[in-house]
Length: 117
Image (cartoon, rainbow, N blue to C red; front, top):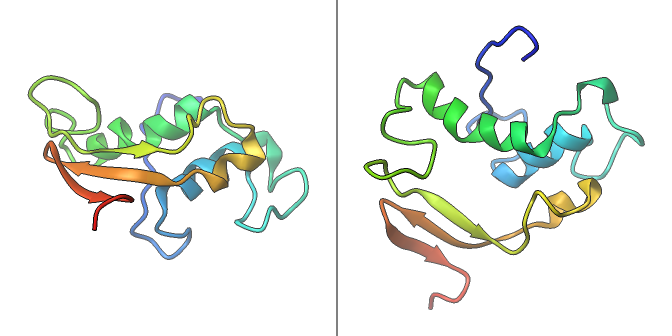
């Protein structure tokens, strides 16, 4: 990142759980889902929440050459996003892993909702 290299995260690898919230947690606090190790793994590599979100959105789209179609909420781009229980920018680091999705929107359509029957 310091060198200006585009860096993306993803959930299609067996390294981290498929829950993208856990990518935010791991990147910002550098702990596993059980909160280990205390203080974080290589804590000097912790990144700010803004960067963690960017790596999972616009940087992910850049990595696949699709930044003109997805990765940010802009007119003309795919409307793929989630509604969360909490604002990841405001939740204390160790509590980020407890954030849940309330709704998933793909292409502007609700495809999953906690209230859907």
